[in-house]
Length: 153
Image (cartoon, rainbow, N blue to C red):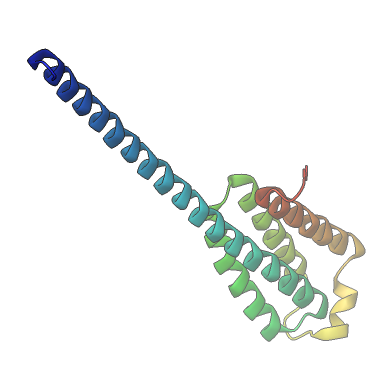
Protein backbone atom coordinates (compact mmCIF):
# COMPACT_ATOMS: atom_id res chain seq x y z
CA UNK A 1 0.00 0.00 0.00
CA UNK A 2 1.08 3.43 -0.84
CA UNK A 3 1.65 5.81 1.97
CA UNK A 4 0.25 9.29 2.08
CA UNK A 5 3.64 10.71 1.14
CA UNK A 6 3.89 8.44 -1.89
CA UNK A 7 0.37 9.30 -2.95
CA UNK A 8 1.18 12.99 -2.62
CA UNK A 9 4.38 12.57 -4.67
CA UNK A 10 2.47 10.68 -7.37
CA UNK A 11 -0.15 13.46 -7.48
CA UNK A 12 2.59 16.12 -7.81
CA UNK A 13 4.31 14.10 -10.51
CA UNK A 14 1.01 13.70 -12.36
CA UNK A 15 0.45 17.48 -12.21
CA UNK A 16 3.95 18.11 -13.57
CA UNK A 17 3.49 15.61 -16.40
CA UNK A 18 0.15 17.23 -17.23
CA UNK A 19 1.78 20.70 -17.24
CA UNK A 20 4.61 19.49 -19.49
CA UNK A 21 2.13 17.77 -21.82
CA UNK A 22 -0.02 20.91 -22.02
CA UNK A 23 3.02 23.09 -22.72
CA UNK A 24 4.26 20.65 -25.35
CA UNK A 25 0.89 20.70 -27.11
CA UNK A 26 0.83 24.51 -27.05
CA UNK A 27 4.32 24.62 -28.57
CA UNK A 28 3.30 22.11 -31.26
CA UNK A 29 0.27 24.25 -32.10
CA UNK A 30 2.37 27.42 -32.31
CA UNK A 31 4.93 25.71 -34.55
CA UNK A 32 2.18 24.28 -36.72
CA UNK A 33 0.51 27.69 -37.03
CA UNK A 34 3.82 29.34 -37.88
CA UNK A 35 4.58 26.70 -40.53
CA UNK A 36 1.10 27.06 -42.01
CA UNK A 37 1.43 30.86 -42.12
CA UNK A 38 4.88 30.61 -43.70
CA UNK A 39 3.54 28.19 -46.33
CA UNK A 40 0.59 30.46 -47.15
CA UNK A 41 2.89 33.49 -47.48
CA UNK A 42 5.14 31.47 -49.81
CA UNK A 43 2.17 30.42 -51.96
CA UNK A 44 0.98 34.03 -52.20
CA UNK A 45 4.46 35.28 -53.10
CA UNK A 46 4.85 32.58 -55.76
CA UNK A 47 1.48 33.44 -57.30
CA UNK A 48 2.27 37.16 -57.33
CA UNK A 49 5.71 36.61 -58.86
CA UNK A 50 4.40 34.31 -61.59
CA UNK A 51 1.83 36.97 -62.48
CA UNK A 52 4.56 39.63 -62.52
CA UNK A 53 6.70 37.48 -64.82
CA UNK A 54 3.78 37.13 -67.25
CA UNK A 55 3.23 40.88 -67.15
CA UNK A 56 6.91 41.57 -67.87
CA UNK A 57 6.55 39.43 -71.01
CA UNK A 58 3.37 41.26 -72.04
CA UNK A 59 4.97 44.68 -71.62
CA UNK A 60 8.01 43.58 -73.58
CA UNK A 61 5.83 42.23 -76.37
CA UNK A 62 3.69 45.38 -76.44
CA UNK A 63 6.80 47.57 -76.49
CA UNK A 64 8.17 45.75 -79.53
CA UNK A 65 4.87 45.68 -81.45
CA UNK A 66 3.85 49.12 -80.22
CA UNK A 67 0.15 49.12 -80.39
CA UNK A 68 -1.45 51.76 -78.14
CA UNK A 69 -4.31 49.50 -77.08
CA UNK A 70 -2.04 46.54 -76.37
CA UNK A 71 0.43 48.79 -74.55
CA UNK A 72 -2.31 50.30 -72.38
CA UNK A 73 -3.61 46.88 -71.32
CA UNK A 74 -0.11 45.55 -70.72
CA UNK A 75 1.03 48.48 -68.60
CA UNK A 76 -2.15 48.50 -66.49
CA UNK A 77 -1.75 44.79 -65.78
CA UNK A 78 1.93 45.27 -65.07
CA UNK A 79 1.21 48.12 -62.63
CA UNK A 80 -1.29 45.91 -60.77
CA UNK A 81 1.24 43.10 -60.53
CA UNK A 82 3.97 45.49 -59.37
CA UNK A 83 1.76 46.78 -56.57
CA UNK A 84 1.28 43.22 -55.33
CA UNK A 85 5.01 42.55 -55.59
CA UNK A 86 5.60 45.64 -53.44
CA UNK A 87 3.32 44.17 -50.79
CA UNK A 88 4.53 40.56 -50.79
CA UNK A 89 8.17 40.67 -51.86
CA UNK A 90 11.45 42.36 -51.10
CA UNK A 91 12.51 45.82 -52.18
CA UNK A 92 15.10 44.52 -54.65
CA UNK A 93 12.43 42.68 -56.66
CA UNK A 94 10.10 45.67 -56.68
CA UNK A 95 12.96 47.97 -57.76
CA UNK A 96 13.86 45.66 -60.67
CA UNK A 97 10.26 45.63 -61.90
CA UNK A 98 9.90 49.38 -61.48
CA UNK A 99 13.12 50.00 -63.43
CA UNK A 100 11.79 47.84 -66.25
CA UNK A 101 8.52 49.80 -66.32
CA UNK A 102 10.28 53.17 -66.30
CA UNK A 103 12.59 52.09 -69.13
CA UNK A 104 9.65 50.85 -71.23
CA UNK A 105 7.75 54.10 -70.66
CA UNK A 106 10.81 56.18 -71.52
CA UNK A 107 11.35 54.22 -74.73
CA UNK A 108 7.72 54.58 -75.80
CA UNK A 109 7.55 58.28 -74.96
CA UNK A 110 9.97 58.87 -77.82
CA UNK A 111 7.39 57.67 -80.35
CA UNK A 112 5.12 60.42 -81.69
CA UNK A 113 1.39 60.10 -81.09
CA UNK A 114 -0.45 58.20 -83.79
CA UNK A 115 2.57 56.18 -84.92
CA UNK A 116 1.94 52.43 -84.73
CA UNK A 117 3.52 49.09 -85.49
CA UNK A 118 6.45 49.00 -87.88
CA UNK A 119 6.36 52.81 -88.26
CA UNK A 120 7.56 53.04 -84.65
CA UNK A 121 10.79 51.24 -85.51
CA UNK A 122 12.52 54.40 -86.69
CA UNK A 123 11.81 56.15 -83.37
CA UNK A 124 13.17 53.43 -81.09
CA UNK A 125 16.93 53.34 -80.91
CA UNK A 126 18.93 50.16 -80.62
CA UNK A 127 20.26 51.48 -77.34
CA UNK A 128 16.70 51.91 -76.00
CA UNK A 129 15.91 48.32 -76.89
CA UNK A 130 19.10 47.09 -75.24
CA UNK A 131 18.25 49.06 -72.12
CA UNK A 132 14.74 47.62 -72.03
CA UNK A 133 15.98 44.03 -72.42
CA UNK A 134 18.65 44.65 -69.78
CA UNK A 135 15.97 45.71 -67.31
CA UNK A 136 13.72 42.84 -68.39
CA UNK A 137 16.53 40.39 -67.64
CA UNK A 138 17.18 42.09 -64.29
CA UNK A 139 13.48 41.78 -63.42
CA UNK A 140 13.52 38.07 -64.30
CA UNK A 141 16.68 37.54 -62.24
CA UNK A 142 15.10 39.33 -59.26
CA UNK A 143 11.97 37.17 -59.55
CA UNK A 144 14.07 33.99 -59.69
CA UNK A 145 16.10 35.12 -56.69
CA UNK A 146 12.94 35.98 -54.73
CA UNK A 147 11.59 32.50 -55.49
CA UNK A 148 14.88 30.90 -54.46
CA UNK A 149 15.20 29.21 -57.86
CA UNK A 150 18.85 30.04 -58.28
CA UNK A 151 21.54 32.34 -57.02
CA UNK A 152 20.69 35.18 -59.35
CA UNK A 153 22.87 38.24 -58.69
